[in-house]
Length: 503
Ligand SMILES: NC(=O)c1ccc[n+]([C@@H]2O[C@H](COP(=O)([O-])OP(=O)(O)OC[C@H]3O[C@@H](n4cnc5c(N)ncnc54)[C@H](OP(=O)(O)O)[C@@H]3O)[C@@H](O)[C@H]2O)c1
Image 1 (tube, rainbow, N blue to C red):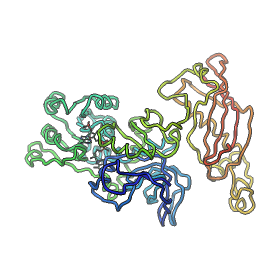
Image 2: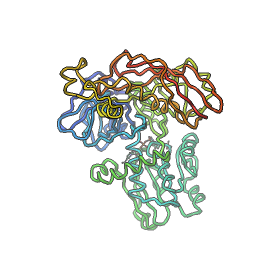
Image 3: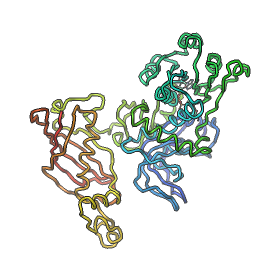
Image 4: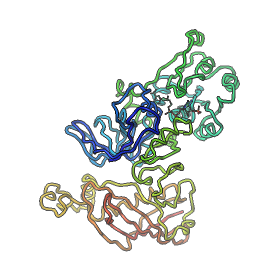
């Protein structure tokens, strides 16, 4: 496998991408094929030997990833091969395969793209723990966020707004402040050109912010603290500026204010049940679109060092991720990737340009998208067999299929992949074409080309063959659906499908 390696401590350009042997999971460990790994400020510190822990050389940096379980050591419970998971590790995520502790896997919520899953846990986990768990920010209070366009900063803005607070975002350029505004900030301060204390006085009528979220430190910390409201809470998140500020002790006394340290990694280790309680709350806010990870760049593994350099150069807004595999498979695709591999799918239907069904005529003859991978595991095969009352041993009897079956394993029913057409069409068109409803009408031609062994992953490559207005806002859509099997050149099925879109 390929890995981005730090062989000597130093800046990102000293790192190399090398072929190394696949790691083998030990007892309790899981091997995960990385699809996307979130890039965080500590990664840039670890490679310089400037972080709290110092891994032995050589090592791959990277502490959060999303991917697919490909192997397991003895004694791992509650994890399945092929499962999509979110993982945290101290380091090692910037590699094609990563060993993680089987107890620390989080199942990916259905429908969440890998890049979002990989860039969520650390930044939103830190900000949620800090703002809700430590500062107990209340609706109607005011929060100042420093370094607000960065990874944890943007997460803090969105969380502050989701909790009903007023959020003042502070950052160093008009472009970064524009991103803060797009992400919900109520008021903006450019701390490289404006007097932060004066602006805070103006914006809060002299009262000051109730909560200050500070991932930057350095020269901004003291003026910010001097502006805090009576009874305020100052969250010490990090020191991106490089300097650890020193504060006169009389200041918290004069304001009746608290300085609160936030250390997410230790929080997860020491207060796991509290973290586990935070997770569904955060996933709930994502599903309601109140939290939306902002991914400003996707870098293939080979360009991972550049991702770290851009972070250090303050060029990044929100999160950047390192990817492994085709971008379409990995990506939310809602924000423009800055380092998109040329092999990206030719998806013509875009989320940011919702079209009327009639407009799709321009796409006839073109590929309109490639769905995410879907695992046809034994559980899904059994479910299909139960629903269709088609319980043939070649599909459901694992032991007999291993001994007597022509493929050495059970295989999915030929129609199981086809039953995924509505799901994949919804993924490709949902929210992107203005329709009230859609229905699958039936198949025109089908060619079954290769069996799909149990546990294999398939995805649907969809080409638009025709779209025809049938009056009263009804459109007959004909598509060619090619179900590809992961790692195989011959597809499972090519089927022409008819469906109706209703405006
Ligand atoms: N406590 C925890 O548990 C925890 C968890 C995660 C991260 N952190 C810490 O939080 C900090 C921010 O992390 P992040 O992932 O959000 O990083 P990030 O995306 O790079 O954001 C950091 C922001 O800090 C500002 N900044 C000011 N001086 C800087 C400098 N000299 N170099 C780089 N950035 C500078 C930049 O905004 P402007 O250009 O607008 O000033 C930048 O957007 C880091 O120190 C990190 O270690 C702590």
